[in-house]
Length: 127
Image (spheres, rainbow, N blue to C red):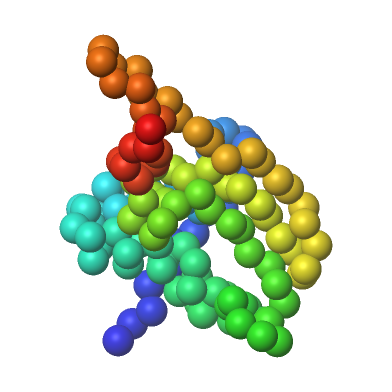
């Protein structure tokens, strides 16, 4: 019944110069440190840097629904597990309805003898 969140307060400062401010990185590190590598644990780690963090900070207007402030990061991932596992590409970053950043989707390609296919992040392939 306790809301647990992960945070990150050091970004290129004298005490810890390796911080990036990247919450997927925090979730990835947190799941290893807390040994939360089950699928349920990984989903909890994603919540710890998204919905739970917003609750702990008392953010108003948080969430993806009508009437909220339209601040979000669009990830190239099917679900939270894939987002953390693959450290998903951040396709777009929106803040209060304004597009701040945009990155082209990552398109990995697999080259195996006798096969020509594009390897998608989901592990599926297309010819």
